[in-house]
Image 1 (cartoon, rainbow, N blue to C red):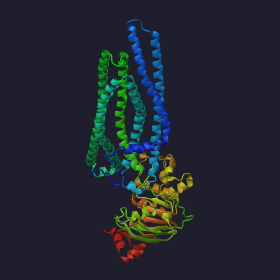
Image 2 (cartoon, helix red, strand yellow; image 1 turned 90 degrees about the horizontal axis):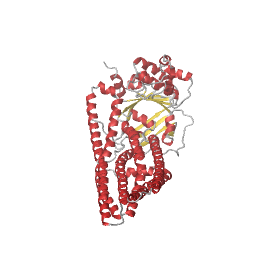
Image 3 (cartoon, rainbow, N blue to C red; image 1 turned 45 degrees about the vertical axis):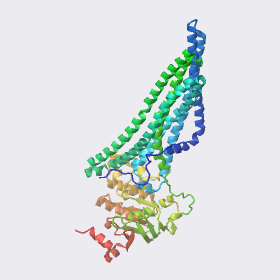
Image 4 (tube, rainbow, N blue to C red; image 1 turned 120 degrees about the horizontal axis):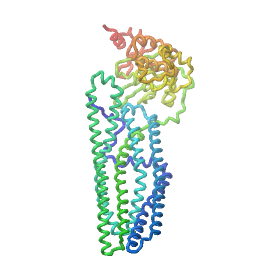
Length: 596
């Protein structure tokens, strides 16, 4: 069994991606610029307080040293200490304000990202979901958005204050002693050299890690959703091996990314300690030579400056690690946000005030890949109220016809009309409202029976619910539940596939649209339940144009028209009796199902 693969559709970010995704993220945050400017002002104020603190400590040191031989001026010391407390107190308040603003902005950005992705998904064509694994989409919506939010929260605020602190300390150091400033900067350049070297090598591993994480989530979602099939085929060991391979790749890319970036903090710590040694050695030498008016207070201040100077450098290193993660995550998130959307249909005004149900296919051509047609020159004219069965071998194009009728996909050429109105001139929502649709795969959400039956149409009366459930054979089942229609559908209820299908059929009956599509709707039920549902469907289809796709040909014998498809074309059409009398392809299909 082959391992999970990324299918064509949504491209994975390249391992050589640049910072373009980060630029997109910054452009995305432009609306928060005013609040960000306030945070910058607070950061400037906090950094100024941090920068001028060492100067007061220098004064304190010089006052103590000068008073050792005579008498220490305690009043001056108290004044300097109170000034320091005031300076650092104001700095703490301003820094808190800056952190609060940036934290608020990052949470708003994360919330907006999730909202935009949710809205974007509703504007994407069905082709996108057919070519992208659900697990990979979920990974982008959850893991990648969380990574962006954490990076903005941890790095944005720190980067702002660090840049300002870095520039302020640089100016202050040169104003105090240009020689000691050069010593500190030269030692810092060594750290920058190693930082750039590490960043260039680690970026590809962060991108690879996010891609591997999406791949693994896709595989987990597929295997866990279909765990019954995996067990039935005894494929646990195979899937475990595939998972182990994917997990090993994720471990490898994550370990390399973390190992490389983990080298930066100790390197920057070493650079900081090196600068202390150099500042002290050069500073003492300058005092002994009487150069530049350097005093012990100056050296003490510069050691503090060197420590403060290394702080923004360390912050830069840590922020670059986080920004690399955010770059990879942003590339994956914006890959969704940049996906081509469905055509804007706000200008379409065509609608059907009342629907008779006449459907016409005019020379329809279609292929999921335009160069590989699935439907070729399909034409059919169906009258209002007819029950139309579409049959044919697997891959003949039966479900494709339904997808085109519902405008889940657009025809390559030709047209589809309802009551003489081209569906391409109507909005997709209007077309969807014309149909009830019951598929082979059931879909029920974790909610009450009533919520599932009333999906998107709340406020149904008890009588309507009873009538629909009785029609599909569910009335007794619901009556035996202690909570009735308030019974919550979850794993503990242990519904059979047949009961799930009965609920979806009842839901379609309650929607009561003028046209009906049944795509293998009774494939998951037993023969006795099928008879009950078939009777319900006969009542459901009365007076409504209905399209029935079925492999069990016994279920469509009473269809008004049977369209026999093969290789994307209609090769036969007529009633059940007419097609049997012809002795053609349909008769062969029908008789093969009852052969001994």
